[in-house]
Image (cartoon, rainbow, N blue to C red; front, top):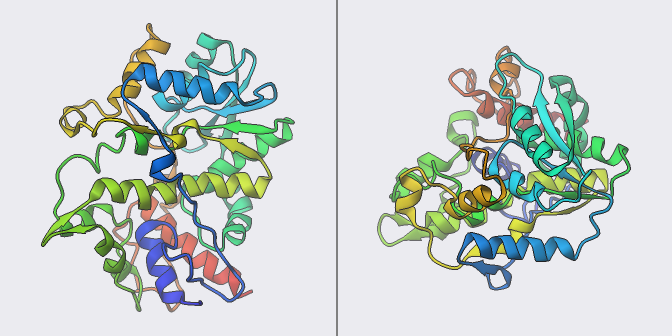
Length: 345
């Protein structure tokens, strides 16, 4: 069913269209990423359990012509340890002044396990070249990860590789979202913390996204933020990768998407600075001489690239709505406006 106002609000708030049955335009369907059901996830109590399960899963795959997406973080660093020597490991590097550069740390992982390191430079021109095809493929605007992942994916495909190993789901499965886990949120506090762009701050006809949050409300003012992270954040985060892989026609596998913690997440440890404490332990097992790096999001130079954008001009948007937004938020609005223009052509 076409519901443009709902879709615009849902995208700004959650970075995807939560209701699978609602679309921007007749015939322009979108597929939300379906997570592995909880009863099919493999429970892990220790770092050694995780090590064994990842090893077991990857042993069942033909990795002779596989590649890995490798950042400077612990999740993909761990996965690199299981790859055959000589495997190509691809790291993105944003071409912008002041952009985060993870290539040095990623190369250290490659050197440790004998992988071939390939650095792929990402420019704003790459975004402009790929954004429209990604949006039409998904029936939805994109957020800042997707053109970057697609550039990496096409580089991998051009090299003749037939399988991509990546580690997006680790943060969700093992307690990596330390900002979101930093406190026991009340209902309104969680809504304010999570919403990427408040629809009412950007749109003339916003739809109240409380209809999504209500599914996670506990009692008068509580919220099941852990389940929300698993389901809502998990679907949007992994979906960005899957859309790129599908558009490029590449097979993919994320071992972390099939794992879960056996014991309840120790929030006290996370809040004391030990996010993903089981994976930190596994990283130390894999790289005894390398300090455990702190978590950073996938590097995206949005503050630099969106600095000169003056905001949307379409009638659906409030005037000057992006004036106080971050680069990441501006890109969501930019992507939405570009998508609306695209589907009207």
